[in-house]
Length: 198
Image (cartoon, rainbow, N blue to C red):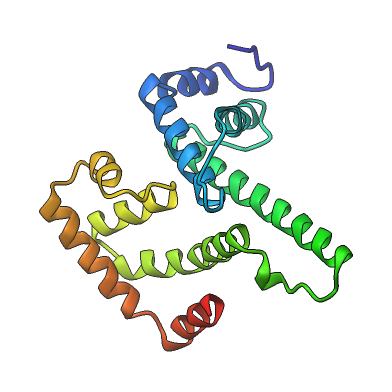
């Protein structure tokens, strides 16, 4: 591992202790799932892009660009870093796609960007709504875990159940509770979501 002079020995030891092979594998899986969310209709993601996102999160943490407190779980910190990096890349790309279209023709509206723009809007909506649902979930650990895994980019039932270590009945019940919480969102929030989706 690269020597990092400004970090304490204890910080480096904790980083290395928490950075297990299993964590590394989950980071790659989460990065691939996140990138797929912004990949448009084909859902194709290059291995090099996945590697870039994971390595950037690790490097930024290790060189201090992203601050990590060793008393907090390293995996959660890195998953958040991956999520934010992929979202920011998609926003940047989407913004430049819009600018390119606008230069070619003033008649093209941003809502006509197609799959990439649609997916981006949904992710931005989710980023706004998830904290509110988490607050409403309170002490329901299964619903909170589902939100966390969905936030990490997992969406397939089998993948979520595997990571959550849930049986099918547990998963189905947690999903029902999550849907009920979503229906309980304030009317204004639901209307804003519907407006964004239509």
